[in-house]
Image 1 (cartoon, helix red, strand yellow):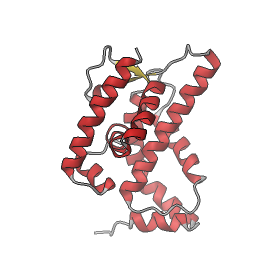
Image 2 (tube, helix red, strand yellow):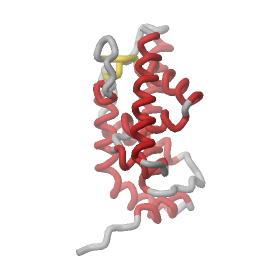
Image 3 (tube, rainbow, N blue to C red):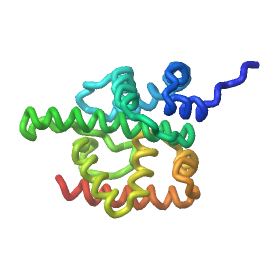
Length: 187
């Protein structure tokens, strides 16, 4: 039985500039990142992003981060999910700028279990709503990022945020209700 490499150790070595650690890390996390990208890209109505492209773009953005102190695997995957979300938001903003507001990219919210009028919501509207939620309840916003965009379970989210499972459930319910109200008012 072969011993699995220490992911946190590899993350910290990469932060310290070890390029070999990055290569090992990339091989270890690629499948998990692609699964995450599949979930995130599935919500991108236009289908402009394939999971592999989304992972590659997230890698490119992560490579620019220097001296990050990676706490653990959950911290890394939460950051990667946020990066992938940023890629989609930046692409949607670029399309909107080109089309002057006509190129909205809907994002289905079935996974967030909200009963909005219609199955899809503009990815930029979701981003703006999340930014507004961050201003009033940053932890609830992080719960949405981890659960909806990162595909984390309640337990994984609790571990990543270092809170109880009950706190995550409460924040998730609060965020869903808040986002429902916010996104409904934008229609």
